[in-house]
Length: 261
Length: 309
Image (cartoon, rainbow over all chains, first blue to last red; front, side, top):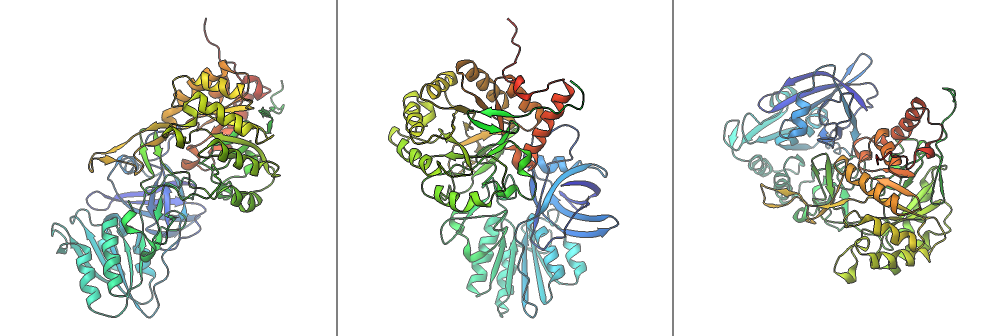
């Protein structure tokens, strides 16, 4: 629960790379997340901002006496701005790993990983552990916003990048890259995480190509362990799934995209 | 007293015997089992389960929550498994030794009463808490707890449906909480829980829309704590039945303030989200404070706020 900041560095533009030392980290599976307190915790109770932030676990590293959990995040609100001030030695509250991970990509098959914005952070470990052929497609508004590009490149996987302003990779949307990749044929598995319109578009493209599609949803949540019911995602078959407990990874066909906020 | 004398933390909440005065608030603690990985439930006084209706409910479309200054709004829409599934599946999964208060919700006094009947005589249910913040269908959406006549009808109907300890959870969205408290006492309630969430609105400026799909939501968290303290204090001066204080409690100090203002027990709510061990830490902290301040019996603190003449 209690984690110590081991390292905290710029990761380009508004992005930050945080390494947390956690004594009893049980290990995580790709797609799982953690709830992180908004900022370091001092001796006083922090009331504002109140809620912890759900963040994808990016990587983990074994270190003497425990693990270091790496979080790649973007500073874009009050909670992440406070977190960005945390220095090595500061303590943050961490709850995790939480949620259902991505299913393993088929060993002999082709996997296309589609990440947009901060959603990219959910995909690194999936790319790193995949056994078969992997194509990673990353999208962001601009080169500044693009997370983790060098990390993915270092994995040696096929990598293609799009940005809305053309400052990184192709000018356009990451789903444009997906449409082209799907035209190459085969029936790959698609794994997507990013803004809801991006995931919805990716799911529709993949569905037309008869590709199994897994999405990792990012609904706001207060608790992360199934009690606040704030993160409910409407399901195509009626009712709701909780993003924290039943997800964050869902079969894209199971989601009622029209009613997903 | 000697420094090592044990502190007597037991309290009676309208006939519900609690080992300590810290419960968890309805809607913030699921059905109890969700906290198993974080918390030994025997460390808290008891918990109030998520509100139950006659039939299961799916709840509202998203967005259901939004963070606000020192708090949050929610409009979950009373998602719950229904009273029968609660009795059949959820209660047996709970560890022994923690009193369970079932929260009851309905659209009419008769449906509230039916849920009460189905919970009465169930071995693990120590008491009932009536959620009076439900919109009354026939009155155009006004909450039961906002109208003294509707509230009286509701308390009367539920009182006649059960012999279990009966708590009424009041809405804070009223002009006079003292009047509502007296209605509960007059109609035979054993205690009062307050406050429920404050009705509120947040706006997403970028989309020019309400932040919640339901438009209105209930404000909870530290932001409402002084409002809750005020209402507990006013209610406690109006009635003799015990009060369970609720509203932004996150620490032992917060809880102790509610005891001084007249609450016999308290409920920890939104803090369970940000720290799943919060309720146990509040209970432990009350003991530590009593030890440091020479208080041998927690119940002796209730209603001891010193108000200058």
